[in-house]
Length: 222
Image (cartoon, rainbow, N blue to C red):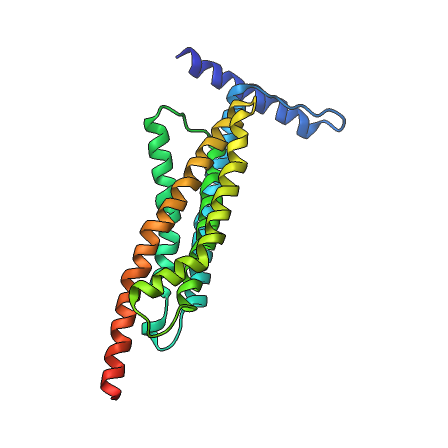
């Protein structure tokens, strides 16, 4: 109850000085305390959510239009959906694991999904490009091997450098920076695991279907 009255008083005081600032030609007042800082962070987080949704939609549409091919059985539009889903899974896994480990949530962590999704989509493009440049007519195992071999260096280097860069922030003196860095580091590490397992598995399953259709059409033509 005391905290509620305190916050109410602060809001009234803030409104009072805001009115003075609007009516005065020379005076400008600005209040700062922990409660107002938390409220500003919460407002910032709520404001960022629509932008995150718009970012996911735009990137999904971009992947969809750039990966569509004809005939449609060669198209990778289904993979584009999982290319966005995999980073989302990495974010939720990292958040759930760190909450379970006792790390609190901060409003600054709203930036983490943006970083994870953009890096994850970049990895997805590299893996899918490796599949498109693999040997046509080869076995599924060979084509997947060529796909991973073509993309593993870029994906691995990206993952290692990003994880190490954010891991340096764990030694910061600022608690909020350490919290942000540990969430980002864990999310990017889990993203790498998901891209090399879950997403590659999706590419393998859909690639198997593509190869089966190609063989079926070849047998029909002969």
